[in-house]
Length: 110
Image (cartoon, rainbow, N blue to C red; front, side, top):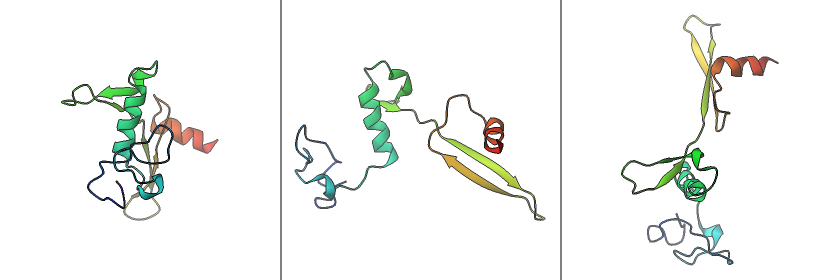
C-alpha cells in the first residue's frame, strides 16, 4: 500500500527501469512493505510457468491464480517446571519438506 496515495494504489507494481510504482507513480520508499499474502501472490506469479511451479498451488476461484506454498513450521516445546504445563513455541518461516517436530528437536540438541 502506498503511504502517500493510501487507497488509490492497489500495491507496489515495479516499473521496468525506474524506482517507481507503475500503479501510482510514487517511489518505492513511499510504499509499505507487503504482507505475506501479497508476497505469496507475487512469488506464485513468478514461479507459475517455471520449472519450480511445484512450489505453487492454484487458488480456488482465483481464475488460474497461483500462490507460493509456504512451508512454515511451528515447534512446540513443553515446559513442565511448573504445576500447570506451558509451552514455548518457535515459528520458522521456512522448513525443509518432510521435517517433523521430533527431528527438529533432535537437530537442535546437536
